[in-house]
Image 1 (cartoon, rainbow, N blue to C red):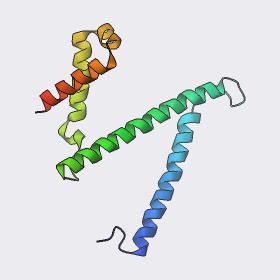
Image 2: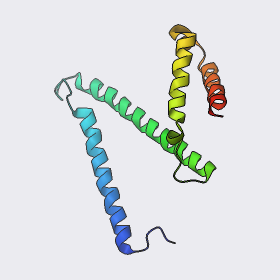
Image 3: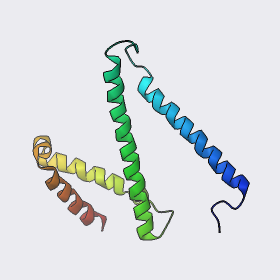
Image 4: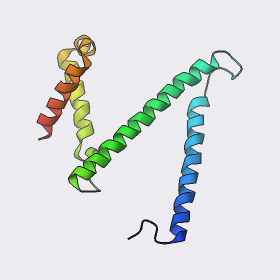
Length: 130
């Protein structure tokens, strides 16, 4: 079977992608410019735009990581319906991080080496997901 059996379905796909691309650009501009407290001619405008740009890049990275995790999970299980969220792995990760902060304390958790907390989180995720 082909991905696009007819020319109409291919054209529909291209139009959908063009519309979604235009909407994503408009929404990105909206996130950057909406309720900006200073005028564009002010010198304080660019630092605000740059700070919001960093937030948008963080959102894109999180979306990419989520997509990659879902595709990997679906490939490993050979099932296109199952997602990590369906099994609650994202909630389990949040629970483990919260428990680590509560048990270790904020100062210990934030001052500890990132590799140590990462490995501890992985060990707990593997143990609790079994």
